[in-house]
Image 1 (tube, rainbow, N blue to C red):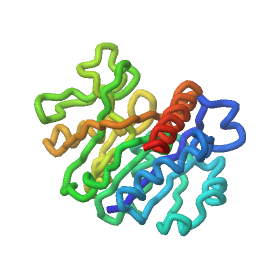
Image 2: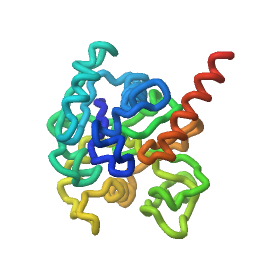
Image 3: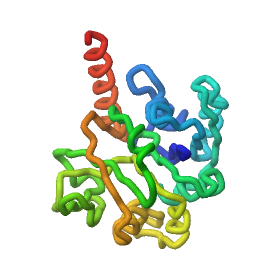
Image 4: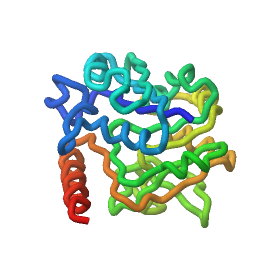
Length: 240
């Protein structure tokens, strides 16, 4: 299984911080943001990882992360020439994946939970990771029926559950065929929700509800909140 970090986009909601660098290189407490999703993949046992970034500051990633030797992993880089959606960015990883299963994580998502067991137990289809939140209408929301996920709605006015779909996904090699069949949404992008709903419709999507903290860090408010979360977690564990 291979790891993919999607770190493109313009970061317009964090302007003017993103005028000088990619948002995924901004600090979250004491580390660059991208260190957190990278560590999630490394802790899961993955050592072959692709980073997909935009054109504007691609060299900054290489300067910061290099070959990956600092973490005993192999890092590869791919450029997303223009914003085309999460699924479009993932599609750029087809050659890298080479028919293997993949773990995909958004570069602005920070997780406390380990996914090592999920990596070891994954067999086929897709898997999403959910987090119960008080403001589900801000996210893609999973509709659940017992132990099954039966649909995902993107930012619904009236959510069918309180379970947000986080920016962490697992797919088998079929995902690239699915992406090739997608039509652009009203935003003109290829949506990862459409990929997930394909697997759901096929009855091949599993899910896991996360216990630990989760935050994306794509706005000033969430960037601040993520830093505070990391600080509190470090402080708590320092005295255990």
